[in-house]
Length: 327
Image (tube, rainbow, N blue to C red; front, side, top):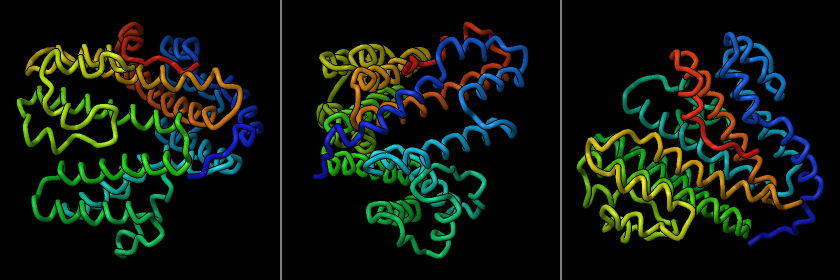
């Protein structure tokens, strides 16, 4: 365990409070949605500190790298940053493992933002030498390759890496001895499991298949989730932050039961509500965790707005697809 005092975060918390003023607010998103063209919409991003020039993908990738680099240089414990970098490492692991199995070059699909650069990860993977990576990551990559070679099922290889990703998140939260971070990870696991149940049920698959995809570490056990049906699913979460999402999910868990848009939004909004509590805390690790989540949420919102505009959707439809904002 390695719990730092709240006062260790005084300086970085003050910086983050100032940086929050440049987050993408509802008003700024409205301006992007109503902009005459993509160029005008991009100008709103420059007001929020995004680099000028380049494609949207390049702009967001650079912004993400800048956030991690900036906070890594000033946060008291870099493991706080790593919790949010993990998903990029494991995305890249999935890409590398499946690319090798299919005999295709995965380089263009690798994402920056992880603990290790895509270039370094690719080079090490090709050499069969990931010694600079963590032991859980190395073990998961090897296991995913074995599963894919034996069963020829990319989904099962992905599941190996997904479970390892959440396990590392849990490990880091425990090492940091942060109740707030543990709560974030536990809620993230609950959301992943709730989504899995709804999707698997809509596919008409349950039983062993469902038990394979459920993740450990949530507030509801895998056994209870695997046995849940219909209204009993919403009962499992009725006293927690996922009450509304579970209620929607229980009604949509049948094949052909309607679009999942509202359910997905309710899941994401529950996580936002949890992390938004960080804004009420004057200083501490919570401010870092909340800001990192807010930036990830912002990147997602920007992509949704530009994708909606490109698809010719009207402003109201785009707004309906956006999640709650952190600020």
